[in-house]
Length: 85
Image 1 (cartoon, rainbow, N blue to C red):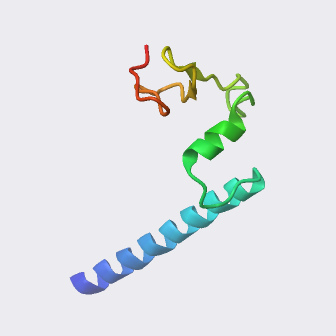
Image 2 (image 1 turned 60 degrees about the horizontal axis):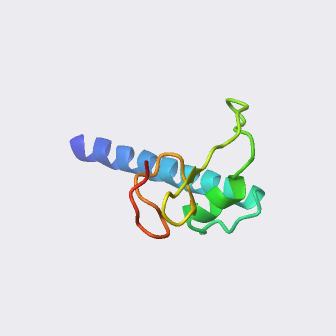
Image 3 (image 1 turned 90 degrees about the horizontal axis):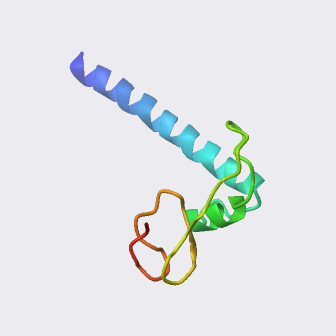
């Protein structure tokens, strides 16, 4: 009985993981990105757009050393590695 329950749980988990992966790939494709593109490409595409849930502009954080644009929650610059303030 326990083995059957584990097998059913594993199948349900696999189906859920497949659905989430397919949903994520379809969202990226709708935005004109490759479904397998790195997240920085998605961030660059979304810069300046409004967040659909909060209707506020998506902000970027500029590096104090090189001036590169980074995600708002970045602790270090993605270009030069400098500590963000």
